[in-house]
Length: 447
Image 1 (cartoon, rainbow, N blue to C red):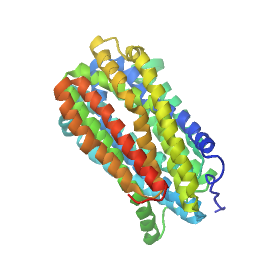
Image 2 (image 1 turned 120 degrees about the vertical axis):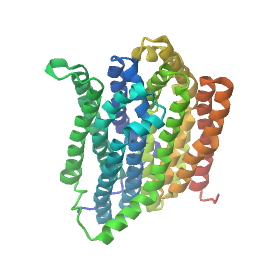
Image 3 (image 1 turned 90 degrees about the horizontal axis):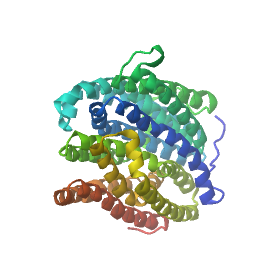
């Protein structure tokens, strides 16, 4: 294998982070449009179908979080190997990460497929929605390994500074999904009308194509994949390196959708329209946060390469750049969504009760988006350094120590307004905590 170059250890920090993140913005924007496009077309079927798909969101996010966690572990391990000039180690790590992800994703999705009804009953789904949820998730589960494996495979490319490849592939996949959705949901141009199942089939077909292309790029174009068959000792060592960061990162990311599941249960008390309205908001929200997701996707490899190369001053500069960008851009987002919440909600529904809940969420929670973006980047930075436990503590503390007590208290006082306010206050408090902790780390102090 040819030598791998550590591409993130030179140049202006702000310009380099921007150059790495921009391709990710377009790719993630396209990928997250999966949910928005699905929501738009499913909403045309009726509030019942929209509410059914809204109940699936926490489960979808749990499985996605597994991929994010394994991708974080892979990216961190590969980036540190690249920064240290160990090309063969990077190749072994990338290959074994793909194998591990395939095994985990297939196992988890098989369990999920056999427990659809009891799981969603536990999440508070009423009996009349269970057939629709089953119709969607019984197909969606088959697409999940085709989502998780490319996520981990492409994390290896980010570790090498090749974020533009991921951006292009994700954009193409979103375009394919947008074309397949109306064809399969409504039965256009001779295709069968599958309704809610059509959205799941569109996802499955798109992600299957993405999996094949991603593996082809890593194997034939980059040469980062080798044979998965190796002595057990080598594979076990790779898996340990990946899960050292991957398991805490996975747990950190799973905590978020678990909290979302609790929120869905709380909102369900206010009726199906309230769940449908929040379903619109939480599918629009990732599009608003797209720049923060893109930035966090490249912060980990940046910190990993520079840490392994021993260039601490670049980490101090990166901390400053992240703080200024997240807070400044977050303020602009809050203003934009405050002005546009109504028109956005009306795109998805003409039911006043559903739109009102979506508008309420999109005018309260975005106040805290800048702080939440900072938390995401700080978590990625710690993972890139090979220190996953601060990120784990921030995520767990955010939900268990701050959000859940606040949500219980403020909802009891002010209903849905209090519940959404609890989310905003939590993000602001934990954002300050995250900023301080990374500042201590990059300045070489002890906590």
